[in-house]
Length: 189
Image (cartoon, rainbow, N blue to C red; front, side, top):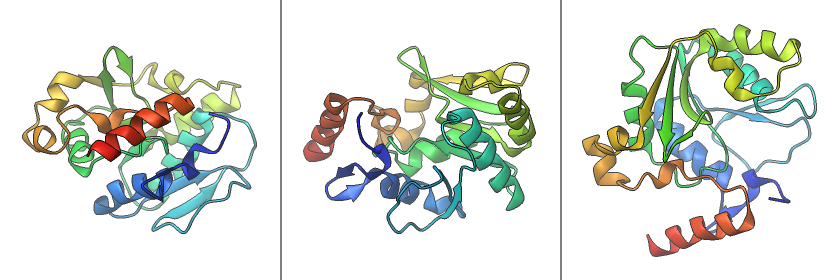
């Protein structure tokens, strides 16, 4: 993207602020940030990554550890480049975790590990993988009970169907063109 995606704005609101707002109804929100990453004022607890350039798996380990330390048994893990995240989608994901370790959305054939629900008990697993040199986020899924949910099932939830039937909540942006497309969705409401 060439810039910090957390600070990219839609309708004058930074993406990270939008994501935190979509999660706020759950209670405590934890934001994992790079060591010196500037962030706007957030209604969240910010934990800083102790090491630079360790990748998303390390961020997951830090976030799950912080959530577990706050007494949470599960955590909704969302990237900051999901500015269209809707609370109804968050609730639908949480409701489908059941006894599984991870609930992983799969939309249009793409797994969404940064829009998923994880048991916080996976923090040590993620930490051990990082210590072993692993950087791939999907590595944490090996050997754990993962329930994959496809877009059709998620969109079939009545609250999701009413609030976000096209699952724009799970659209991220990795290029300026993709960000412009998200901005177009916001402009078109």
